[in-house]
Length: 113
Length: 113
Image (cartoon, rainbow over all chains, first blue to last red; front, side, top):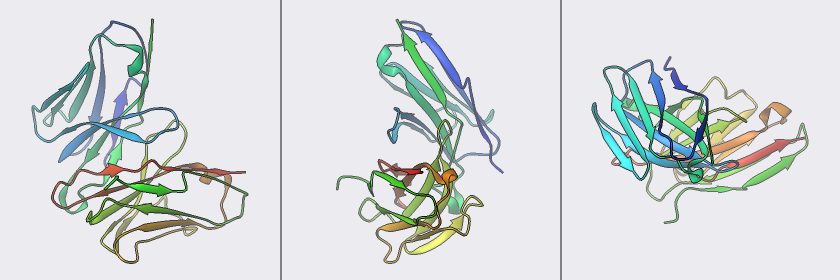
């Protein structure tokens, strides 16, 4: 059974600081997603990572994928308050079940002055 | 096309009542997925369809839950004899065989009182 683990689960950051969220998974993946979720809202897709060594950046967020280590990271640069949210990674193992996602527990990020 | 649409957005029901949720996927997306998200957790897979065929059901989907996609377009998720533990956000997503990325709807928040 695929397990997806994120750490940390809670992250309190000061504005302007950098930090990394880690996502480990237990079996081979076809693709890996990062989502953002605001309280009471649905999931907003941030990144889709398709291959080993993939790196994507959008604003202050950068995601990378190491399929050999079964590890993805979401790096936050110079955090601002607007980044406060819950971040999820999710793994699609592909094959005939493509599109079916297994999610991590989520990382609650709070950015304060 | 405006994306995946779910209805209702919020539902409050008394314990023991039946509820039904609807999901309209993105046009021509052949796969449709249902997830459940309880407070403080990541979404958990419930079931998915390819066209009108239900291909997989999670162990989470007890016999009180039933999902249909009768014409391969919209889907319904019914919960019979609701329990307080059914209180959650129910998320629907759809994907196509070509792009494969799953797009999520806004979710239906169920509260059982």
